Image (cartoon, rainbow over the protein chains, first blue to last red):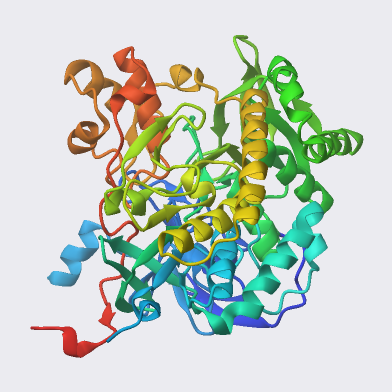
Length: 104
Length: 466
């Protein structure tokens, strides 16, 4: 299930957020990447192949960890901290069918 | 009338070991440098500090280098009030007089009289089948997960690649309680022997490296040399890594759910490129680097480079070259220079350069790696462009240069701007053309050097004309 394994620093306060419509908990100081991948297997899907992606460089260089927040903006998950009430989607409804449906 | 002090406005980009030491010297000289850094806290990647509220000690986080980390962090804490330190700031473009920055959604133009680029490095990677699968990370990324977040990249981890970081990260993971399945080094025992005489110049570094290897073996971690990856298995997450010994047919399989890999480091040079600095191909780094003199000057007056962003030499060299560049800047600005200190820095830097050459012999770039890649292997992570597409462009479309390749295939045009694919594109293109990496040219940088959000607020709205 989870991709990342917590080894230490687990004393921190919990932070509530929403992951793909489900309530979820992270720890204060987690990046969005850590918050998601300690309970899920991917951050997003490649826009080109549809294959799952979960980041790569963890230091803001590869740009492979951008995730969609329901509040609007996309954020780079490795360099954005999780915050109480964030609503995160690892499968944003952005395919062409959905766009067409919304425009209808 | 403005005094000289008013017009002397040095800017340092990067608050890693090079940037911090440069800033320290400039502050001591009575200047107030602007220090722009993408990270929320100073230290760079190697001495990256965890977010506030994390409890592990510096010796847990930085091991043998914890005193150096502590000294750098303390220096920055002590001097923060005497410089204009702007953490969380992306420099996304620049020209001869100003830099374009973005900090917490606010855009600002920062003028400079002198500029020190201390932009650091990221892992150099080459593709292999399955490298985009969730659970495959860079070595540096694996270390960030542990150091910055207290996490392992998986519960059964294989580390692969080459360079000092390979054994260090494996050691740190095992020590932190992770299950490290194996360490696979692309370098051979012959390479290690070739590097040994030069490594004797750096007995502490050599002893540390040998200690990590012995410690890993003693704790049941298998170390294999001279390997090449075959593929990562698992569609939605890593289930195994297949590899073979170089030039052998037999494929070995390791059950694991994460792979951390990297082939030494790659300098971040986009800003030097945008500023118009001249570049030369560096055979040791197998990369184009900003042309620099031993004092840190680039081809552009008033622009200096230091640390791994000016060529890979490691954290100790970064501290020295950061300080060196600051002294050069002061001298160029007709300020007093401590000549004895400068001579000392130059001596120590030249020793490190010889050690670096030995390290490169011990952990050479596996130039044959890309030859074994299948046509369908993804080369560009951003847009899923394959090795086959690059080879086709090279052979059928007569493409022999990287910027032409980018125009026709989009390799290097995605969000990462070539950071993750330029080494691969260079090697695959050169091999398909039957030529050497330096002859396929250098990928030019484009602004913005990293993606910008659409909603940016100018710092001073009066400057916006609509």
